[in-house]
Amino acid sequence: MDCTRESLSVFLEGGSFRVSDYAEYEEFRLDAVVRDPFSYICPYQGFISAGKPGCHLHPLSSGREGRERSLFSAKICSAFLCPAHKILTPGEKETLLEHVKDWYLYSIAICDPESFSFMCSHIKESYGIDPRGPETGILLNAGLEAHAGLLTQISGAIFYYSQPEYNLHKGEFCLKYNMKNREAVVKGIRKRLIR
Image 1 (cartoon, rainbow, N blue to C red):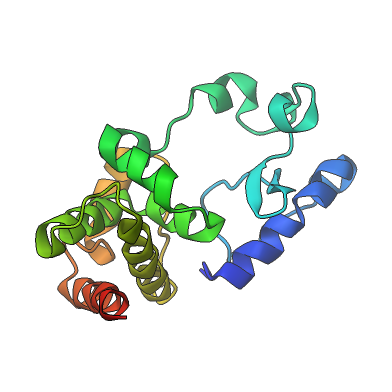
Image 2 (spheres, rainbow, N blue to C red):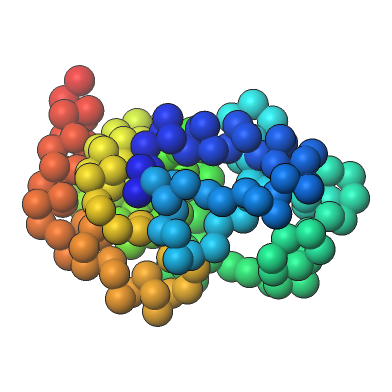
């Protein structure tokens, strides 16, 4: 699957078209380069404003409830929480919201929350940097950018809808378990620190 910024941008830019042409949705099939063809990906995702992905059917973006058109309906969509919601600590969530403003890098952190946790700990423990300080954002974004480059080389899926599913596969790409990837990300963070 192609999880590059460019590939995901093309998919997200088509979100408003997919919402407006519901009849064509019946024939719509996501290209496997965006997501594993055996997993569902909602076609109603897209940029809801410049650089801000979201749900085109959600009442906060469309002005009315439209999620009944989706596979999971409004009830399931409203109740869904991704694995990052449970894995990231409240402090890590605050750090993510405070320092990662780029939609793509934010998505990388959400797809692989244990790697984001690793980066937060590494920056604090290795460099003694306060997670709320401004240099934290610079280092986290450098680490996420390096990690994103590594994730584009993974042949399988990198986002999972449930924590057990994520736990089953994270050894393939998570920085806590993949030493080769960890070294590359730590190097990317260190290079940014030296500047």
